[in-house]
Image (cartoon, rainbow, N blue to C red; front, side, top):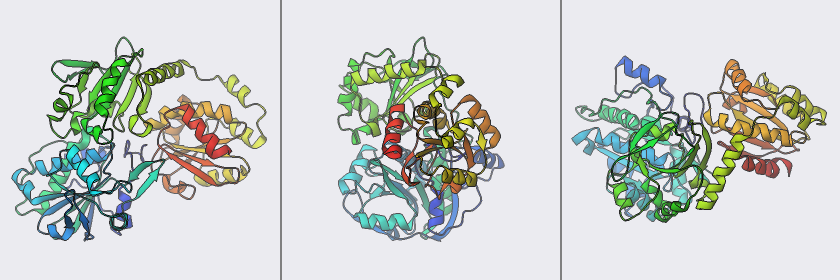
Length: 537
């Protein structure tokens, strides 16, 4: 999913909410140690890097158990600067990025890093055993670099509440606030950061935290990093580039003479998928029409030796490229690990598949998905005449929606009035924005679904945190058979909690919200299944 404009590609909840929950005022945006006006300007303009929220309040104390089964209290680290993160012990999305940023922050301080304590607190309510936090620490090379703490679920909930950490389980997946706190040697909260889902930004976040920690340490030790805070440009599938190949040589990625299939992975995926090596080896039997390339996300590997060690004795037929900068993962919009991406010969995105949430595909199933993606891409958008024919005979309240197809209507209060007028009809509301890339990718699915179900279900759009002109330009390129209303995330909150964009809200005939789907729909079939389950039943 994506968050509001300027915080794109974040998968989880907005960490700034934590400051509100624990009663801390949100201060001005600063660079956390750097005083250069150029740095401030670049940081303010970087949508993938949180500049941090300044805080001033005693850090809530806690006593939990670390990865070795030892009791640990926050107050025991008085006299040291502390970087505290809330991590899901089985996370394959943003948590490994948070972990790497913490390591970078301490490394950038050189010898003074010994005065900085890294702490993690488990944010997975279903994996709270000491063995869970030990497994994460070992897999990510953190076993002796930090203290990863856990406890009973009631104990963890008390700490989550004290620090404003929102933890939810949606369709079996853990969502939590991706918060990073910097605590001074006197035990006071000094700054709150939110990890963004951007691989290339992680060293910048580490540098920000290093500067903040330096300000808190005696003598203000130098930060051994001079990265700019300007946005790191991603490298997408329309750009040809050669990446290092595991074992030597290079691998060419990007536009080609034929479509390309990529599988992004990291060696620590084996924490969640113990049979990772066997699964990768089975891909030798994949026979789809798009050749497969494996891409190791080297930017978040625990060490340079992690991949060679994992591949030792593992004979893989597809080449393994290494993305050491994270710019390829960002450009190919990787949101989880492992992650399939199918691109056309020209570099257009055709299909995504999140292995972590949807499960592994056999070589035969993978080939079938690729064929289906090609078939879907070959379909042309329905003409206005075809759309009118598909929706003819709709009841008057639904026909009125169809007559306003593609329009941007005004404010959220008008949307509420419209919904009251549609009482008795199931409704599907898609919250989107013109700047939201996943919204763009799922719009054709809503165009198709609204034609199939439009005579029984009311479809509406909520153009969220956007400008009318941008919204109209977007809808001109992405036609749908229903209108959209201008709204903000806060204005939509009485209807449903919007954690990010895109979000789809399902309402039954009685006006009751039955389900909220956060994030991009990956397939039309999944969307239609949810319409059947949550709107029509």
